[in-house]
Length: 421
Image (cartoon, rainbow, N blue to C red; front, side, top):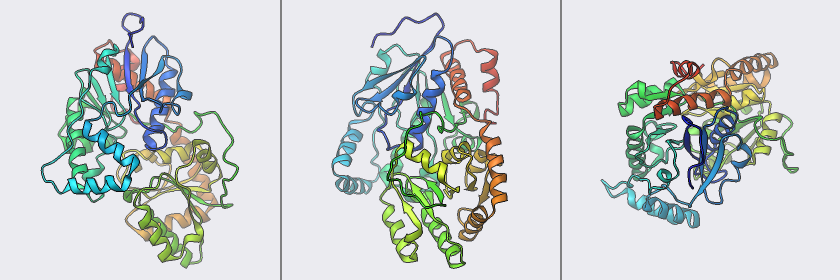
């Protein structure tokens, strides 16, 4: 793609959006929000979103202004080893798991670090913004977004080769980037501690809810939900803590308080362990797992829920918390990692390692209407501090800084710490 005619001093930014619809959870929502925000900026800058061929329909509704989509071949920006593994995983997941476990036993073996094949350099961009951890090395200035260092905090969730890949790749991409972007001050401190990067190379850029950005459509007519329920939207990874949540609900049931729960999100291999615990506790009649649902259905579920419960043991941001605030939904949240910072005083906090503390918080938010009203007000105040327009302006200031362009007074103010309200 030949560079378009641009005004002097304008930027062309490549934004990495290589992900299949419905597989990347909150990261996909963030890229949607970023596209929405950048589309509404004035000026002559261009934002080229790189999406895999045939996998960009989810992003198209957010495009406008200076944003456009450029499709790249499937597997672009990944090493041959990773492309081969992903192809096997898609066609035969069980075989891929066996192969990965076998590879894990080979000490000292790790997946090679991906390098650009020259495409992104050929399209006339000034910088590359890697919005996902799966970046690649390029001589262009870059912003890298590792999101979190889960493998360092919960290594039990990773086989050896996957952990080595994350450690090596995340470190290499962070060291190569001009700026590493994180969402919270907690995340900045974590990156500094683990990778030894100076704090000045790590920018804190808050995310905002995606709720309300999409056109309102009709939810699925067969969306059968309880009259009252708690909502937990999260893929079923072990650190999302579904099992302890189930145990807290069973504790409350045994005390006479039955609280229905609706869970959404892609179901992983850990779902089998969750099902076994549900069966052992005999709580299946009050717990509903819907799996991945469309954006319209998820919005409808948020609107009908009584409250959000978020028991995660580890987060880099915790997007459902601020999404709930946008839907005027009261929130009971874990106090792990960055979540107190994200909630900003808008949620009822609890210890995710304590079943008793979690059950107490659930009981309070379920039975106390005055508390729910207070939490709604607090959530509205917190979400009022967050918007994709502001997030996009922060990124634009970072793009200009990385590209060596003159910063405006607004840019300098946005980049002055702290960048998180």
